[in-house]
Amino acid sequence: MDIREAYQELGVDPSVSDAQLKAMWRRLVAAWHPDRNAAAGASQRMQHINKAYQHIRQLRGGHSDSTEDDRYTGTQAENHTASAEPEPDCHRRTHNSKVRLSLEDAILGCTRTLSGRIVYTCEACVGNGKRVFAQACLTCNGSGAVRKATLFGWLWNEESCMDCGGDGRHRESCGACGGSGELTVTYRRRVRFPAGVRDGHVLSVPASPHGEPQIDLELEVKIKPHSLFTLDGDGLLRCEMPVNGYAWMSGRWVEVPTPNGMQQMRLNRNALTYRLSHQGFPTSLRGPRGDYFVKVIPVFASHDDPEQEALLEQLIAISTKAAQADQSLPLGQWQQRLKSWNSKQKEPV
Ligand SMILES: [Zn+2]
Ligand SMILES: [Zn+2]
Image 1 (cartoon, rainbow, N blue to C red):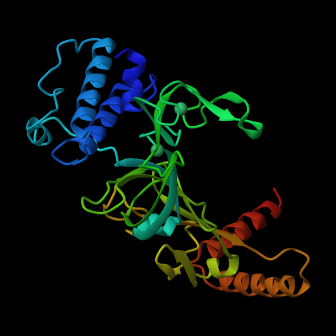
Image 2 (cartoon, rainbow, N blue to C red):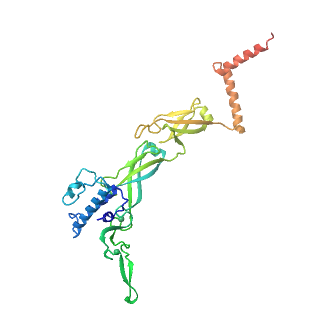
Image 3 (cartoon, rainbow, N blue to C red):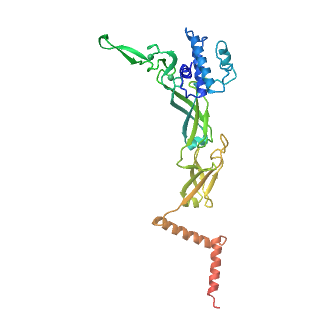
């Protein structure tokens, strides 16, 4: 058996990795093992498979003395599956995907049902749809050519064999993929995103031990921009909110948005930034909520509104009068001092 035959026997391309090679060999052994396969040629096929595998491994170096592990024949087969070395699971796959969450979902945690469809190249046939064996093609007996009768059977024409493409090797449609060269799997999973996930977090969701298909999901979280809230670099949740300047001056209650819904907040004319304790973004994954900061932007009337101007005039007049009357207020005290100083200036020297 030369090296080319060895690869053909295993139905793999010489470019396969050691891991893929081993996985393929194991799959073939599982299929052709005489204990499991009652076909007449199974035992012989098994020997070919092992010979091919050992041959390739010897040539790839470092494995010239085939170990107990590699001699996978007879009763050792069952021992092998129970050996300590981890069995490469050919059917288990990792799928990377992005999941977009709202900021509220990231703050409060959420559960999502994710589904998808994955198409990948069939490993068994390396995407060819056909498996190539060392045995001779049945159609052309290994010659690679077939004779075809032409007009009235007078003449014979040699043509390249369609079944083997002319190389004389036996081919079978790949059973793993039904000859298409690719495999499609769909998945549907309910996934819990814990409170406090950040943009760029990758959530590993391993395949459920008994569920099919065996797909490990690697989910990268993307947090959608929010129309009201922003999350700053320190993980603090913020909101900038315009408020009626007069309502702010007079300490009125206003409604503010929070991740849990609307809430009442009392304005204070001495403050522009308000801290709402434990209403912000979680301080860690699944951790307690941090604080939420609301910055108010007081908005006053424009100067060209005559109605508001008139009311403001009135307001100033009333408040000035009240201040003058009450000497305990800073404005009243100031005007008293101003008056006294001004009258002294006018006195003759
Ligand atoms: Zn052929
Ligand atoms: Zn296939």
